[in-house]
Amino acid sequence: MARPHRSRGHRAASAVLAVALAVGAGAVAQPAVAAPAVVQALGSFRLADIPAQDGVVLKADVFTPPPGTPGADAQGRYPVIVQPASWGQNDLEYVAQGHRFAAAGYVVVTYTVRGFWGSGGEVDVAGSKDVADISTVIDWALARTAADPDRVGMVGLSLGGGLTLLGAAFDARIKAVASLSGWADLTDALYSGQTRHTQAAAVLAAIQAPTGRRSPEFARVLDDLFADRDLPDVIRWADTRSPSAYLDRINAHGTAVLLANGWGDSFFNPGQITAFYQRLTGPKRLELRPGDHATQELTGLLGFSNATWNSARTWFDRYLKGAPADQGQPVDLEVRPTGVHEEHPDWQSVSSRTEQLTFDAGTRATVEGDRRSGASGGAALLSGLLDQAAHQPPTVLVPLLDRSAAVVQQSQPYWQGLQVRGAVRLHTTVTASAPQGTAVGYLYDVDALGVGRLIAHAPQSWSGRPPGQAFPLDVTLFPTAYDVPAGHRIALVLGTRDDLYGGATPPGSTVTFGPADLSLPLR
Picture (cartoon, rainbow, N blue to C red):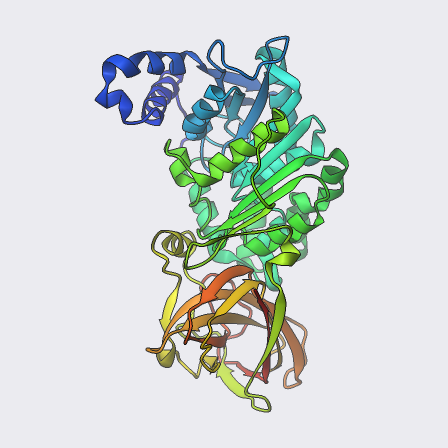
């Protein structure tokens, strides 16, 4: 396959089109009035090539505030925002947001991460070369734009979101970051619950294939992940790319950190984000909304007003400009499926009490291994988007779930409803006919017709267990904020196969689950 390539003319033409889209419909309705604004916006934009330390050239865009824009210091310098492009995307991804930031008084430098599109090198997946590039781009911006060295920020989406957190760890000049649909723990993203997240990895690989050049190291890691081999090496590779491994550096720098993610992010589940947030000691903010990976930020990339991007600008106004921006309590949650917003002083305050629920004490249920039951965590990228846009999470008819492939247990109706807040924890016992296996736990909101809407789920695998001997199994479901309507039940489903994951249960084996205890965090 030929390497992706863009001529300078193609990049310029794309940029003109993107900026034209970003200024909105008013330019079409009133051309005589809007034309000067378009010219001014284009005048603040230019393309750039940024040489990295190893000679690789990074393709970049630069936005500068129009003359007279407030926010400059006595030397005429503005705060600067560095924006690494997301996975598989290029420097033109943020044209609309670059224009908005520049109009608000920021110098903006967006760049294509090495290995993708016109930037040189190979895909490094937030490795040491990518991290070094962050400082290189900052150096370049300070030397060649009206950027203030004392007011440096970063914002990024997906891969760019992970890089913003790594930038905060490795470059003390960065005073504030906004990580949007990013990751804090790449190992958890690929292997939470000791279970391979193969569908998400396959989607990422498919996005990368036509737009980037895979390094031999990355190719080996992917092959090992899919083949279920040399996983300790995969984990070591991912650990070095996890901001959580360098959290002490971020705390020492005192960087102001905004984390914004989707409840249904099929790449970077919210559990790793909430764990990371709790360990931050500097200024911090957490926003969780319904959505899948990068779906909650999408309209902002198209130039429309967007809550997540607006929050990022307010964050930078506060910590780079010193504006008295009050964003309310530091933890902001959008509840599923109602859309109600809640604010909390910290993550621990999200739930006020815990209710214990035991299903079928004293009973055991045996299921056939590695069979689909009908229960599902959904499809990567799609399911969370449907939950965001249509309030429709993965849905099943609970009475039709295959009882030979999964244990299905239901509560009594909750006549006052139930406000689930946080991570539901499951404890059970397992007796398996094989030494290794995977259990996937699902919690459903079930109405009077038996329609079950997914509240949360998570996988958990085991290995090295003597066949036929019972052992305890604990599963922590991915965190959520979900209101179960009055009169509905909740259902616990335990199966051994979900197409999101590379399960370890051998076909033809059996798994016996004992009584299940649920710990429900409630408001």
